[in-house]
Length: 130
Image 1 (tube, rainbow, N blue to C red):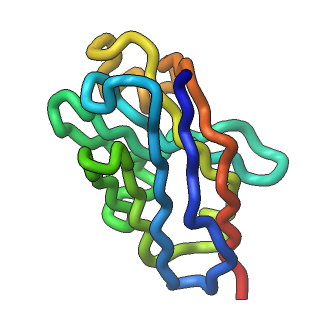
Image 2 (cartoon, helix red, strand yellow):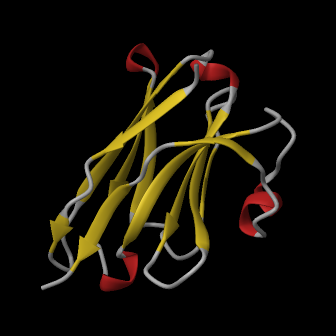
Image 3 (cartoon, rainbow, N blue to C red):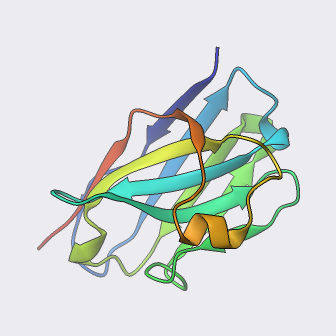
C-alpha cells in the first residue's frame, strides 16, 4: 500500500534552517508529482511546493520562493524540502502528499488550490520561534 512518511520538523529560531524529508513507498516513485502542503494553527491548508517527479519541474508558492528548495533522491524514493531564512509565519504542520492524476495539473492549479491529493503523510511539525 502507498505510504508517505515525513520527518525533519523541529523548533528553530527565526532565520534558521530545516530540511524536511518524505519517504514514499508502495508506488512507482518517478511516475507522480509530490507536493508539500502546510497548515498553520487555526488556518486552512496552504500549498507550499510541488516537484514533478516525471519531468523534474518544481513549483513554489510566492510566500516561500527564494527561501525553500525542493529536491529528490530517486534511489531512496525520498523528496526533501530545504527551508532557509525561516520566519514565525512558517510555523505549521507540514504534510507530504501525492498528487492524483499524474500530468493533469498545472502550476495555476497548485496556486489556486484545485489539485486533488490522493495520499497524505502524517505530517511533521515546524515551529519557528525565539
